Length: 215
Ligand code: ADP
Image (tube, rainbow, N blue to C red):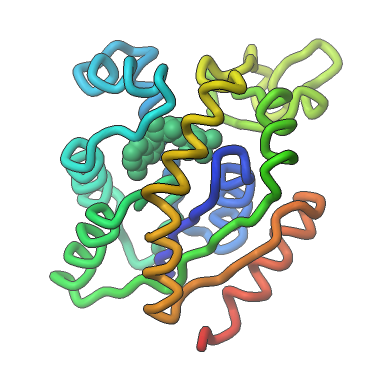
């Protein structure tokens, strides 16, 4: 099963993507986490991406598509995958269609997570990420000594999680990613999930819808 996750910043793509991949034994990729790691390691990709992430803009399509081509070549298998954060633009969706088409494969579903704007804004202000295992969640999820609940690493807020940067990312989402949501709806593979409920309930709803045939 090959699946992509769409949704505005802080809608829970990371949390739900990891939970879904765990349940179905798919391989999981967060393009945002991959870019942040590249920035931290100051690789060539990281140096290109750093100022773009700081402005809350999207990284260019050619760079993202080449990152994905490389990742897919190394990670695509019968088990399938969950892509969190790709495609975010129509050229990226086109790239993925071509990649799959050339291999006689298809996308099983595109899951779109819906959360009201005000709630996204409040989630962003409490969000933390672990630089060791890339777990992401709310400050209230941390251990009593403020460490990552998954690996005990030094989880902290993301540099790009201030309200101004969030607004910019949200605008990018509306401009470039909403057309991708529409595209997958027209293709008949869109699964829309309200993601305001508690995390396990959202996971359950995704699993319920994903095992049903789409119309
Ligand atoms: P969020 O969903 O909260 O914005 P992510 O971790 O998914 O966080 O992404 C962080 C940033 O990484 C995005 O705002 C964007 O700048 C960059 N990014 C990730 N994936 C892509 C992509 N497919 N195309 C362009 N930019 C991307």
